[in-house]
Image (cartoon, rainbow over all chains, first blue to last red; front, side):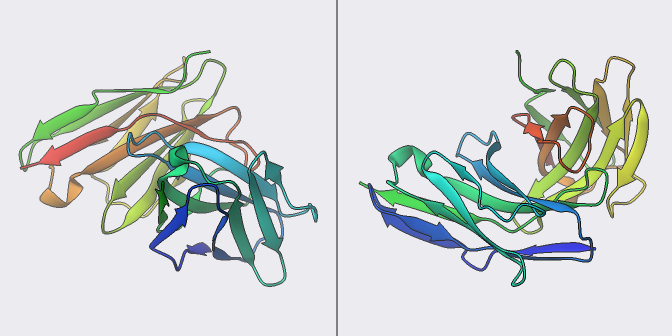
Length: 114
Length: 114
């Protein structure tokens, strides 16, 4: 079984500032993949960033980066230079095992203040 | 390349009726997954299809079923609708449906059960 916990239902950040969204997970598998998805008000879910558990290096995608702490089972998302377009629900997700059966967290609603 | 498409986008049904939702994956993608999204339960995995075979199933009653066609298009059926089935149903496709594969989501079908 795999679980994902996002303890911050809502967060806000000033435009151009940095914000970190928290996520913890649990899985009994040694091979797994972690994801952050963004769901803007239009509802189309978009992949923000992904991390392979076997890679020690933290993934980065432009202004988005993760802090992957495997021993602590923590996978936080850092958004630098926040923009108005970053306002959305952010979901942390895990997929462990061979096939896709993704488990999502409950989401964090991010508000960006101009 | 066209994205994942879902039809219809909105649907209103009454209790006891049956509904069929359709999902067309990205060209070349052979795996299709379905998710139910509700404010109370969040995003929950329904099932995943690959090459016309259901490979994984979430914890949903038998009223929820699906199928995949030879062109990878997928349909999801809910019979004997209940009020609690009101939700956004998301479809996602990936190349092979492996744990490492990135899922691409469609815009969803908003189902309202009256």
